[in-house]
Image (cartoon, rainbow, N blue to C red; front, side):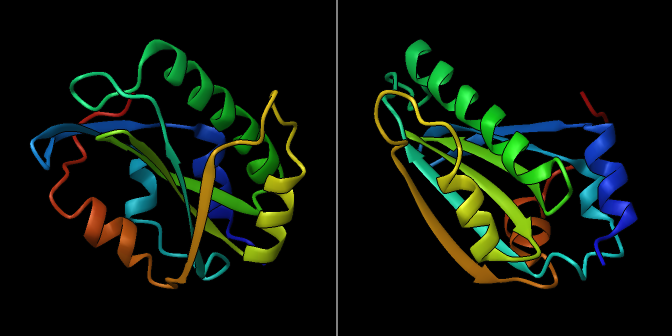
Length: 154
């Protein structure tokens, strides 16, 4: 059974942004702060990382065209994965020519099928999918957000 706590966080759709530097380039991590403290995460034991190498400006951030492309992809991704809380987008990392979406899911194969079924643009999306077992959400809570505060949500 999927978590009502996660469903409520997805419906509220509150996000925070942490900014800094990584590898001498700006980094932005957008995340759902409610997920950091969610207790009932047992229905989402798998981590799916979706990476997109985009056209970057001199600081490693997306050009206007690249930003439009990754934003459109994210809208389709959310519609495909979150409409029934099958999966939850926990964080989005943008740094040095790459955007990464960190998704926790109940079933990696089903998530992959949903992504493959998303409407494509002129060409297939230039994405790479990586998976890992992460039932405690260590990637999100410790690796990504260990130093981030919870002061405000946007």
